[in-house]
Image (cartoon, rainbow, N blue to C red; front, side):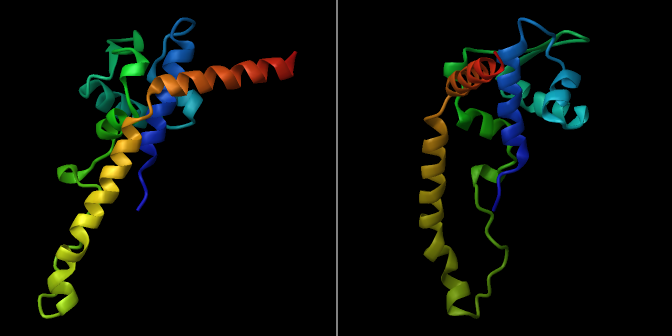
Length: 150
């Protein structure tokens, strides 16, 4: 199992919004330049983030801004906005385990609680990290980079 790159792209987008919104119009083309990803993909992610109420997008050549303070947006919010998790379930169970097999007949009973525990732990951890944490780290690395270049 692997979470798609939409999640890390969305976090990257927020870091760019916060870093550059006062200097540039943060558009899908601008974000595509930073992420090195096709602007069409960026626009799809922006649409998902907007649909979740996490960003505001000005029409035309306006730009993008965060819809609320970064300390109020968690990784879990971003994850839920951009990841296609069917029925809120992280793990997709194989469709038709054999009822003729004692393992197949009982595999849901064997795994369901354990998979729920794993998903709950992941969601708890995602909820504990905010975009303000990313802002803080971004500023730290930019300062360090500026100090090395002086």
